[in-house]
Image 1 (cartoon, rainbow, N blue to C red):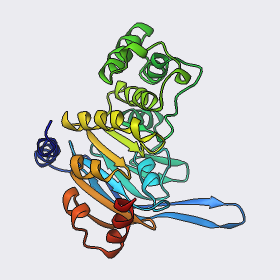
Image 2 (image 1 turned 180 degrees about the vertical axis):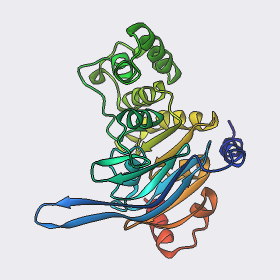
Image 3 (image 1 turned 45 degrees about the horizontal axis):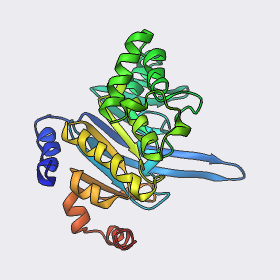
Length: 278
């Protein structure tokens, strides 16, 4: 698919979707540290995500990008603020973060199945084959039968070009293949949103292309995606909007080509200059 056509897919999907699919308002997150003051990672972040949008988060290490991503599916429960997803408001209380402030484990499980995540280090179970890694969530979370789970898992592995590797263990796969198994695992749950946390940073340069191509294909199909990455070519080509973060706040955001090609903020300019020169 030509680059311009690929970019238009997300823009058209976003424009036709109406209100945001997911919103974050006043999100704050700190981590406790032994013999030190808590580390304040997110400092009142506001963000909207629209249906069909590819949102790219960029910024230096420690700026809060990955933490913000984890707050979106509550792997890192935020301390203050609220998240609205598909019309339901999630807020923290003394026992966790719940829809409309009420404890509901089933709804929390549903949220995490609807917001899939692909990690930097693959997070595959080494003692399970590729297809077993993909079926695990289908059986434990969606309570599907072995036969149903196997059928879906095989289809998703074929979708990412690994149908012939279904019986292979992670140790028998390349880094790029492991990451595509991780993508298949997330897709098998039929998520509404896909989160990618530096999905190519652990890969050798020659293996990155296959994973990036798979992500481009998902974008062309209208998948709503939030991507933390240092791949600026991918961000410019596939992203609809780029958000630059630094020290736990959003410094600049706008259309991907504008932010990467002509950033307004001096801090964004400095960051992009160093990344593009590397």
